[in-house]
Image 1 (tube, rainbow, N blue to C red):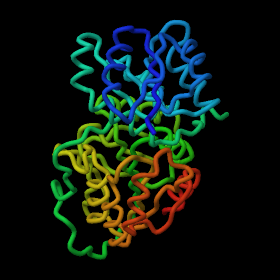
Image 2: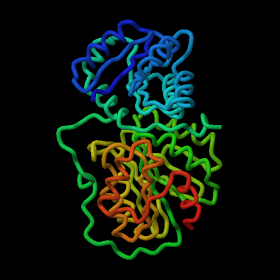
Image 3: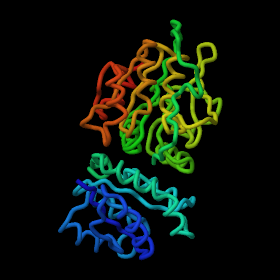
Image 4: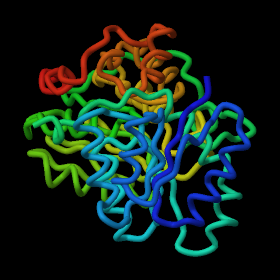
Length: 355
């Protein structure tokens, strides 16, 4: 069956070009277009789409408000098209927090050429969204481009041979997530107290968004949350989020842990890569680290979690029922890397108990 798509954008050019691009793919069917959310909702009542392609700034109702209404009444995968301005980045983060599955950066000029050049990204985002299972966010209830070669963590770190028995008094945690992770991380981090172990997080996200994302979480949480800088120590009550476009690794100096932020190739088609973070945690922290692989498309982090398991770390995978996309956790479970599956609502307690 084809993926039914509704395009909601106040630009007639945008609607026309996107419809033309998508009509060339047999597995995608554009069932309708609308210049604003109210008109879209009328059409959707007759034929509900599998994926909504949504602009942010529109007449009569803005895209964020529409997204929140959809997620509160009938959760449906939504792909946001947004301009990459500083102001737009904040709006995009609001959309991700409200339940958007994916974000496509849209320029303010040269729209036709840009969309044609980014057709693969747009199609990939829609296919990814169609496989997701959006859930009502906590607030509402009260992109992966293919590359010719899929590199592994070997591109940055040598494959582990054996893991020495490491003993330190400090415990740390590492989390890896992708599609659906912005909401999932908010659920987890908001429940943590300042006595939680130091946490390093890889969330697949464009580089211009991670700082704003960290700042937003910091404003909501009791713990400190910020974008990681090279050399930052992993301290209790601090969550470090890998900067978009750069890898993050765990390093040890004596009995203390810190993060290394560095450039490098895409690993498992991502930068930052969960596999890189998890492998470094296995090598540097061994039995002193707890790892959780969370909602996300693909298999990034699956091999790294298995390496952590082999290094005697505590390893968990988010369960299928609470995932937006049960891809990364599923692959980790297949490899035998997760000692246990846990619901999203149980992850914070695991972290607080890791002392």
